Image 1 (tube, helix red, strand yellow):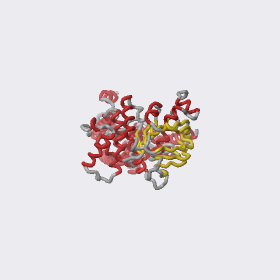
Image 2 (image 1 turned 90 degrees about the vertical axis):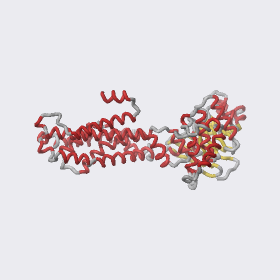
Image 3 (image 1 turned 30 degrees about the horizontal axis):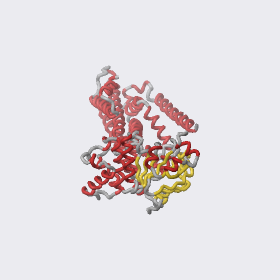
Image 4 (image 1 turned 60 degrees about the vertical axis):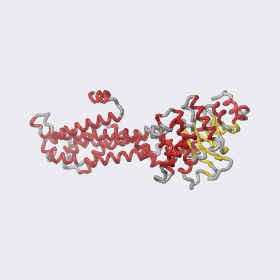
Length: 247
Length: 257
């Protein structure tokens, strides 16, 4: 009962936070005047590309920290503890939010608010985009390692840290990598989306929807390849991967 | 750790998984160098009791234990007891054969490499250890040409024997077996039982089994448990032929369970 109350309270708090963000966006970003080119951004395309490129260390860092955090959460924190439950619940919520939502946040901060927000804000949007999905998929991958392998190594006297680093993680590796591919795919897709949106806004007067920078294609193709990689690591067959992609 | 007439002694051992009490004041003495079987209906605490003896239970975070467990005369909950040394002394074989997904050769040496200094085992010594361990479990003739084969590709019976062989280089004094034959066919079961019989003089075996015929065939002493309590502990023949407690009689005469 207390657990249900806790879940309701957290969910309400998250919804309130979401509404506050939405309200804020309505006030500033989605005002009609903001859609004029001089208000959108003073950045050139080169500046935007630089900003996106500067996010690469943040992307790699958030993925690595996400993996380490997920392993610690799953293996060292007691499952019955409140700390575990709180983290687990937050990760389920954050990873469950569609990536298009994060995409919109990124577009907002990288294009509409660019120059008015710090590097930290940009970094946090990337962390929000990649870390929850990495943590959740790593948790699932570690959880799915056959219990008999753990029992075998523990019963032979292997220390917990060694059992996890040398036996659990190697067995969970394809699952972890699947999550990494998904996270990278998400961020590449959003990077492509930002470039496309920027290009469309900057050239709105030309009414040419195919006037897209080459880098956007690169990001979108990379996102597609990462997504396919994730599907293969999930042990789907080639026809399954292709059909899910086509659909 | 010094040996006495009893390899394992427990005194008022109680165990809880969260709020659920799985063991209630269990006091038992397991004789040295013999095979003792633990029988009882599902959920009576046999496996829980078995897992207490090498403290494997502790990896589940919500376990609380009270009472005393003495292994070879030493309380295993004393602060100076090394968990690694305990698990070296008390080996465990599980219900499902669980060889590691590495070669037969590496499986045998796995435990020893953990407990030995880095690169302290020479190639010749390793080869000898592997041969001895596989010979002890009657697998040498079958596997001497397949030492580099992945252990998970062996037959189930061979995998289970390999799991026993994997313990032997560590020179354990007690071997715990949690339904070791439940995944095996009749031929495999017989082979493992014969192996236990051969090894029983050198090691103390404690075996959990649902198969009463097996308990009767292999064990010298038998313990009957019911709902977390130890109901009766006697010589196997006496327990089956002339049970003292009505609950034991109901179970062994198949009026219950």
